[in-house]
Length: 27
Image (cartoon, rainbow, N blue to C red; front, side, top):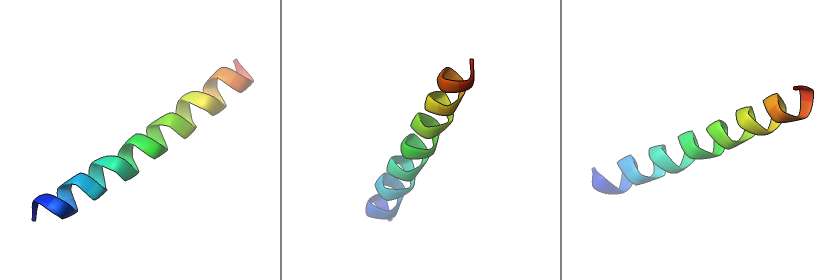
């Protein structure tokens, strides 16, 4: 259970980073 949570958090962080990158690029 804990393992899956960590993976999910990692994926969320990746998506968040991509969103910030695109925002910074267009902005």
